Each structure stands twice: as structure tokens, then as C-alpha cells.
Image (cartoon, rainbow, N blue to C red; front, side, top):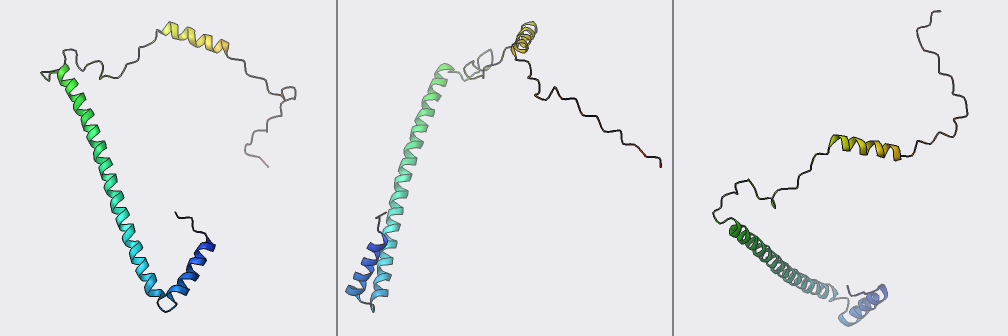
Length: 140
């Protein structure tokens, strides 16, 4: 955070030993640790407060959007009854239309005809290897 390198840290330790003295060093480090702990707790408390305020603002925005959408729905259907044809079209997922089977067959045949024929293996000129003789019971 403060980008203190090893040389700067060594200089701070030497100055602290000279100024404070080795006798009072543990007490000074203990009090410094307490102060650092207090600062960390205060910063965590502040951060938690800011995060809570942001979360509350986001919740209020979502509630406002939901209330607006609810007003639109209530204005569209004031009695609360479902329309005669069932659920409104804008709430239903789009449905797929079945294809004409003759048209689908023609498309499939055209796609097969457009497809390139499979390339022959490079080793087609070589004779095929003989199959292994059938393994059956041997009479000996």
C-alpha cells in the first residue's frame, strides 16, 4: 500500500532503535499495534457502512422498477382478470412453427448434395490386410 521496500524498512527499524531504545521497543511496538488495529477496525466499519448504503440504493432502484412495472400491468388489466385468450402474448415465450415435411425433406436433400464427398484415404491403393482366422476351439 505504501510501497515500503526492504531498505526503507531497515532504515525505519534502525531509527526506531536509536530514538526509542531497545529497552522501550516492545512497549512502543505494542502501542503501535493497538493503534494500527483501531485504524483497521475504523476503516472496515466505514467500508461496511458505504457498502450498506450502496446496497440500499440498489434495492430502492429495483423496488422502483418493480413498482413501475406493476403499475403498467395494473393499468393494462385493471380488474385483475386474465384476458379471455389466456396469458397475454408479451408474457408468453415465442413458439416454434412446424415445418412442412416436403419442404424440410427438400432442404435436407439439397444440404446433402452440397456437402463435399468424403475424401478417400491416402492408403487406398494398398491392398487390405487379411483378416485374422476365426478363433475357435482347436482340436489337437
